[in-house]
Length: 286
Image 1 (cartoon, rainbow, N blue to C red):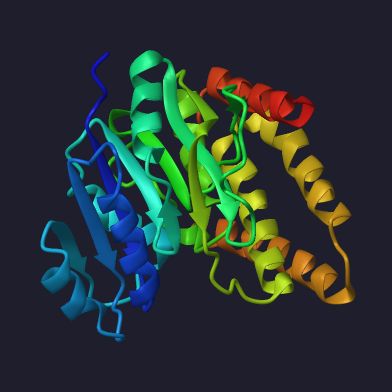
Image 2 (cartoon, rainbow, N blue to C red; image 1 turned 120 degrees about the horizontal axis):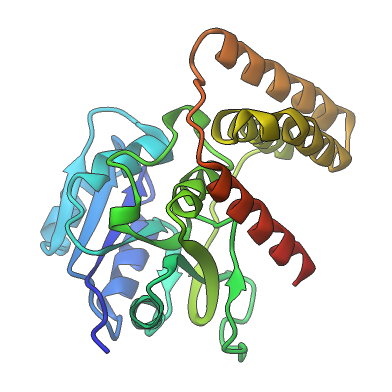
């Protein structure tokens, strides 16, 4: 069984120490990637001097401005040449056999479009035993996520999302192509999650982007029931008055973007939408 070649793509901004730990964890992998691509979003902490000097094997792509996570990943896609691209946050640390497990998983199943490792937080025990059973993954996490390159358009990430939910947009490409997305628990990593900001700010982006995802990506007849349903599901998670305000602001922002033509419909096929919704149900019931 020949494992497919794999490129790692990291976007960074002013996290020099985290980035060094991430790259060193890649160096320690039992299965080495064909290339490691780092997109720097205008760091001012010495990243631009350190990475080319201490990690000459890295394809380093400095940007003049902060393109955000989605824009940075899109900028890096032009340098991807392998069959697989492993998207990785700059504060993620891979356990030694993570990439080998993922590459072998792709080699064993041609219907897989994406594989995600188990992601532990820094205060969790990453050494626990995990069952060798995969599970559907319609809601991936880009802290560590491997995708078939040929299943993606040249710029697959939605720049207008900024943060929260952009992975689901990309996952829809896979379901549209008739591919599956899964979590493979034999592959493991640790996400040393950096400060993500106030919960109400995160909630604002989650509400807005959920609204946009179901409006932009689903066939119109599915959009009609799914958008209100999803907004009610997000409303159920409101825990404070500030979050309720963020919920209304998120919907308002989404509507404004649609009216201004900043969020045009980019729908997947009916079969792709049904595959996605089926995976969501299977994930919920598993």
